[in-house]
Image (tube, rainbow, N blue to C red; front, side, top):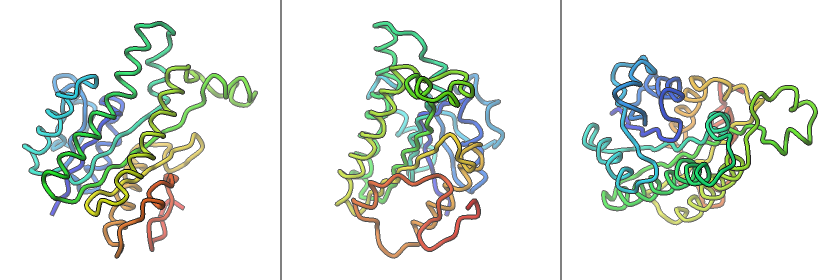
Length: 245
């Protein structure tokens, strides 16, 4: 039976290749974006585009309900933090930008995580939460490294770099929180700048689908301590050799 995956955080049009990659891997896909203007961002015709107003907990609930109404159940949820994309969107240092940054890069992920965990508990079903962080050099990194200075077009500013740290801390502590819950699995995926598997979202999606399948085939659920470890994109799954290694 096909699984359903909800992809949030790397909204369309930026997340089109990743959504297409998961669809090609056999998933029913719901991805956040503008249903009226972002349909050209994906090529797989059965991908559902759903609106998500990140500062609203009500919108998080509506997003989850739309996915469930379309495909009955959400098996896996990807929360994707792409620092390179955010670096282009958050360049000012102002109170207004600070509020927008918190709503977009912090609060939205928190609201959606809580909603997914609540739905898993209510349904008494199994579910996976996958946190993906795509790293990007920040202003401090560029100052420290002459190589990064010459190769980084748009360094992440204070709001993006602090939000990335908040995302990783939140993801790790959700993994710790869910460690004793038999029906919840948390997967943390790290994508460095030089990571070949993560260079293109299509290949990242293909690897992730294989990795998640290998977790399903494992005899035992990973411990909380194991879930706290960030997996580098391209790493082998339990008992398998990755084709990207």
